[in-house]
Image (cartoon, helix red, strand yellow):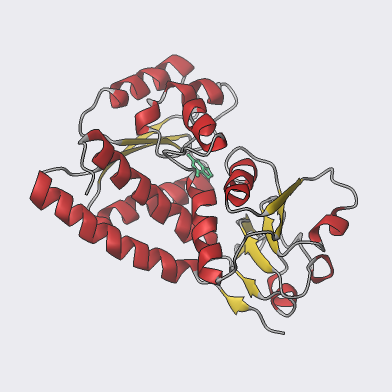
Length: 287
Ligand code: GUN
């Protein structure tokens, strides 16, 4: 069998087109321009690429964006005062602090300092809690993008076995909650799960978010499964590859997301969507 390729690039392009129309309407009808502030600490190359893509996405759909770059050795209080300033800036509806942060920074304190109603990443404990009780306001971008792609695959998740490899706060845990909301039976695995393939072979939906190149091999995948690859790994030759051994797994799976062009573009699209949503909420625009 050869898997259907779920193109996040195409789905994201469609979503961005819709957002551009919506932003146009917010501007002309309500004189509201959604605004996003992105904070980058240090010079991590992968983070720089993400941030650049976020800026490009904002430009494309008409969102105002500003980038704040701080040196890697910035003290905590400097970063906190920038966040305070952005919290109080009326033209900013979304604040995103690019993770990971350098070691001297207390990341959780930073995430908690962001106003929950500007937390377009959905990482503030208030938003995490709202997601947990099924009343999400801002859903983390990558998990939200994964759910859109699963819908795109055409699979009805009700009663299906969903297995996630990875238990991060950014992907593994929130996507588990979203899959549960769609009535899937959810298993979260991680690097210490033994034996891992016993779990993955049961999966109708397999989400790989472990951060190891080509970790998921064909012998770990149930025939016909929908495989979502969240990994973005840089190989020694400079090429990107996912957490899934794509060529071999694509022969066995029913549907699969590529890397690049799968989950990555969806993360950006969902961030833009959350920013527009925040601008609406801040201005009580319900239409
Ligand atoms: N680093 C990797 N993914 C993300 C994300 O979704 N948000 C932020 N802020 N940092 C990240």
